[in-house]
Length: 358
Image (cartoon, rainbow, N blue to C red; front, side, top):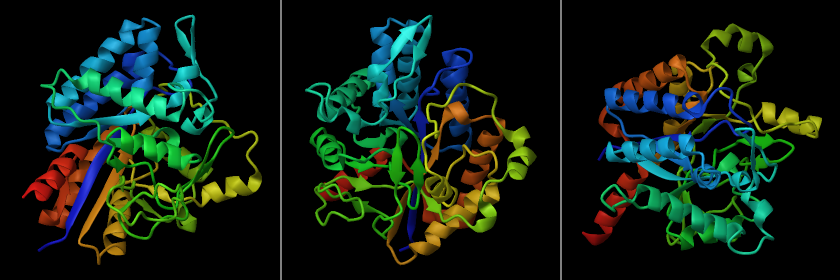
């Protein structure tokens, strides 16, 4: 039997976290419409990781311009056979709304809510987020199931045990927050995935040590964002950024991260961080995306199955990025033929339950 390479085309469905430039359509809904149209044209399903706490907060602020489009677009995507799953940026809970603009909070990760009382602690935020997303998508025949998670800012740590236990308790069975070899530090966040299990996929341990795999399958299954170690000639340079500047998407908003307090040694470590399989980076080429995929297929050639994610953000995508996504799908199918398939989390969940019941 041929190896099955299963790829999830995942996109974090979120606004620019530091503020928008024009309006919500420009920042999120218009590029997502183009993404859905492209997915239809090339015949692949996608996964939208919905930043549901933004919806909760805008509803509290009575901003129908955002909430109506958010609900309508996600329900449309799901009705077309795509997947919608949980993405949490908890800083929304501490945001303010002034002069028709949202004002960012620096309480960026779930761990910063650890000492809050329920329902404002980690378990409460996860529980309410899942309930909100399920309620939002219930109109699709009532068959929606929230089963997968991506941490906002990839922040599965600290307080990993509390996060994973709350996710599993609320029905989450898949995670796609980890990117092998990725290292990132800002004034508000630390992400370090340089020491994780060496298999293509694994179950996350409830003891909080992300370097270990859970020996039990009664846990959350990790589907990492595919990566490749960065070579010395792949380090971003001013020349490269200028050379490919014409590919950049127009400015749609502000970043939330700053690095004024980040130490020089951590900045150097970030330069050497692995590179993700993403369509966000305008310095990438289709050849480089295929190089990342090929690296993972070769690295895990002795495993029966490889399940991995590509990541993107509609807010960061323009014409070049859409072209790159289309070319990646076509090139992957051409090279790997019947070995490769593009799936969603609900596909994996249904397949797993079918096998268990057969």
